[in-house]
Length: 499
Image (tube, rainbow, N blue to C red; front, side):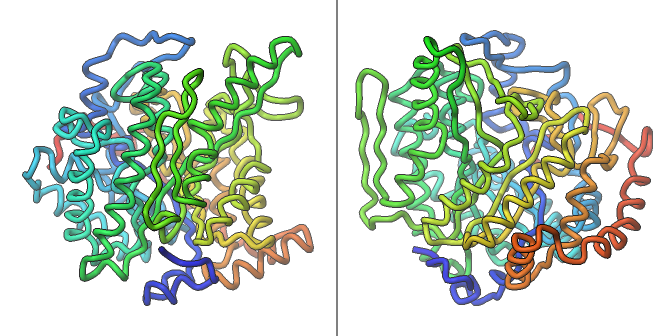
């Protein structure tokens, strides 16, 4: 097991890095730069332009794809690391793309390895702590061809990949996550068909996929800890915490509640919450009841830290139309701004007894009218949770630059910096993003000082030294705002191979 949440991660890893509160941004390299050899690239090629799916879902949206043009962090990493640093970040979450490092089984692309080291060099020079994800929805096509996580015998390949990543980068990266949002990937890939492999209502196989990923997490964790460097590394798991609330006319609300209950169980928090508390995985299917069960032999699963990806809670009608309650603001992604849910997610996750990092939160807001409000409300919800005892040690905003939002394409604009695939805008700081810069400049990086600031906020209702913080941030904000404009430099790039 990892930390028991005693308030000092330093006592576990010997580095003292646990005393630093992470103020960061999060990206997925595939969403920023594409990659020829991944399952997602193959999925887009094989399914496009067939967009229609049952239930009113779309497989892909928008005119452009990451195959045609992209923000290209892979080649513009120095700029992006600089932008993160100027925005007040001391941490940067990114994916180490398995398909770039091992595009064909057993073949390591040393050019890709060198590029990742160059990215880490830039972060080190900027004083930024990397936080690496080993599987952020994507993997090599050769692994997909073997059956991916549908087959238990393929777990060994993920464990081998994890060990190779540690061998290549373990001396430079302390914080690792095995998987990003295993239940989200399952639901969209095997229930709705919007993500690879594009299967619909494959309910039994979906359960196997999640179970195998959780088993792979445990096996990879234990294998990493057996390495010479393993005990100094912090290995965690990242989960999408979302709840579903039924609404609609009374006669039909029962149908909506039935659907919401299953969504909470499959995709939301219940499945992973039970597993994190007990190590017991139970998969249930409508009408069939319990179908799969697995108990981790060590009881609670091994995990040094827990990543919470939180955006909102979803309000749904009986026919699964997204909704929001009176007085709530709907985002472009069809869920409302709901800060209380972040507080609830953090307090619930605190039951696991290990440090918590908000590894993703953000807003799709093309108009940029609601971004500052969302950031302010969510940041204060986090500080309230910290004041109430939640062992939260980081806040990562999703994402740095507008990118390819999976099946939604470039239509959902989460970035702090605006970017358009047609080249009209390139890395221009959004007005609403300035709220995050101000918070990052105001909040202490020292964990103990941050906890004290959170306590004062709850007591006094205001951040300490708010006016001073505002003034100090203005020079930085002016520089960042002036930086991005039309035609400044290259705007988009054709997708390049993993070299």
